Image (cartoon, rainbow, N blue to C red; front, top):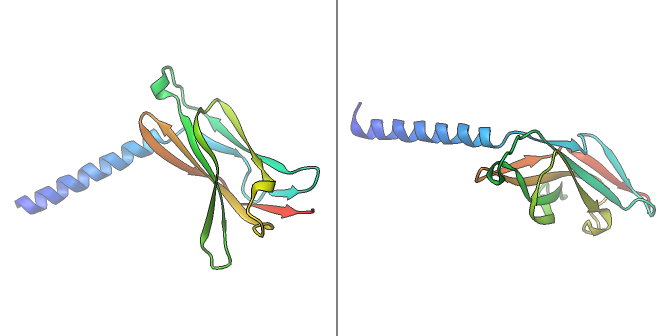
Length: 142
């Protein structure tokens, strides 16, 4: 191989290896609730819902334990653009089952009813990972 071709090949190989390694690092977290196509009704009596995460990672030391760093609630506006509302930021260990309560009254006015999904950011072994829940509907009866 010529030098430029060899360099490009090596860079491509390194990118593939990095991508595969990152995907392996981002396994073991599953969105248990809400499931796709769930309907959550916001009423005077029920003004909250939960994001429930499952964790199958076996972290024996602090470096191998996945941590939650941010949760965003997302929907599309009338122009089909994502409207992202950060609903939780911090650093908290993800247990076998972790629940994050979402106050539905904090959703931006005019956003409900609509289809939403959660975007979840975690860290595991120094890698940042992103997950998304299935899309669900929030309706209002207030």
